Image (cartoon, rainbow, N blue to C red):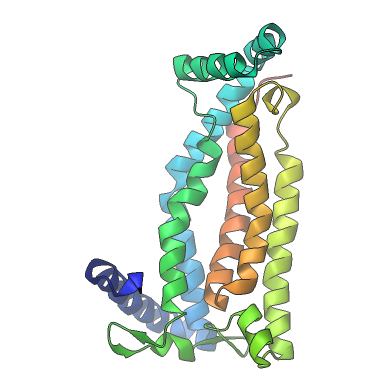
Length: 249
């Protein structure tokens, strides 16, 4: 069953298709043959701009968890032999203080529908019954609909394919590693002192590197979206960390 054929989703996809083509046409004088790729980057930046309030909420939640670190350590000391009680008391503390241990996951979850649309726009030969003109668009000689894994499997991968995907995947991996090092959770927020916060932190860290794996399987346009958004995320978090610094350990 093709979920994108469901009428409401098909209408959204068709509207996104028309909008991206129009945006590519507007960018043509500036970006030339890379206008469609530039459109994907611009859409990514617009989406991330709209999600800035969520990023601020995430930074505030990190700051609040840091502020609660002494209380989390005390809970660990008192209930270290009773993990279930520790988890209940930890959640009660978060609830009483209005802090979410999973705030770090919100930006990635909020982007999932947009990434699904970008993926579909460059994965199907036809959109709403008409040929998909976006598949004729390229970046550095590689079709925006090309997937690295699919191209290698079909024997159609070229040097340009490996080069373009290699650059994007390298950007994702390097950015993820910088993010991991820059935002490593303090001791008090790790699993032994705050199980749920630690789990959320590990999940966010894992997803950062999983993004590089995903980029291998999705169309080039979606990989471009992923690379752009991980760089944005790093820059945004660095700025917000200065605005909302963590409490001293």
